[in-house]
Structures are given as C-alpha cells and as structure tokens.
Image (cartoon, rainbow, N blue to C red; front, top):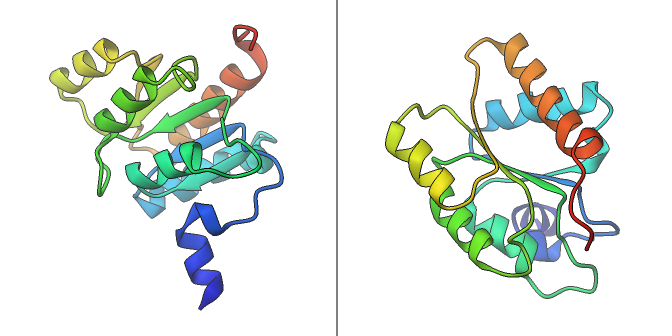
Length: 155
C-alpha cells in the first residue's frame, strides 16, 4: 500500500537526481508511447512522468532537498485536476521556472488553445500524431532537440 501512495505522490518518491524531461500526461497509452520513444532514443532514464497538472506543480515546487527543475516539460493540455494551460500559466509566471522550455504535446487542434499557449509563453506546440510509429518518432525528435541540440541560457 505504501508503494502505491509513493507512486501517486511525487513528494513521497525518493529523488536522487531531478529528471531532465518531465512528462505531464494523464492518458496512460500516450504516456507509455512517449516513455517508450524516449527509451528507444536513449533518453528514457532522463524522464519522469506525472499524471495531472497539480502533480506536475508539486513535482517542481514541493519542498525537498533536491530541486526538481527539469530541462524541458512535455505538457498535455487536457489534464485532470488542473488543465495544461493553467500549469503553463503558473510555470511561465514564476521566476524560478519561467526559463524552462515547455512543449505542449496534445491532441487538441483548437486554434484558441494554440493561440493561448503561445500567449502564455509555450516554446512549441506539437500535435500528437495518431499513428503510433509517427508518435514515437515525434517524441524522440523532441527529446533529442531539447536535450542535445538546443542551447539553454546559463543558470
């Protein structure tokens, strides 16, 4: 029982090193495909998965000895508890997290969500491909770009 509570609550998980990629995704199929893609391109051990917006903010902001500031966040918009746009707003208005690249990875093609995401400071808006193989390729390309090609500002 304690293991299940620890799995659901990031504050209870032992964190040795902060993940470089934070995946915020409540659809378990999409989350597994994303994590599979990251494993296939050698980035799987650098990722952490949370299932809703509130858990994402807890992962980043909850008091702990090791800060959990990822190098990139892959954020779905249609989340339980707190929607992705609200998560994006909070992260981009907080000085500690404003500079973290955030990629919206969503199935939503709603123009208003694209516009609102960019107004709030998203770094990229990517539609989830319906085809599993293309989905894996897209996620691998995102991980590769943000962790190995992109040059972030100095801390």
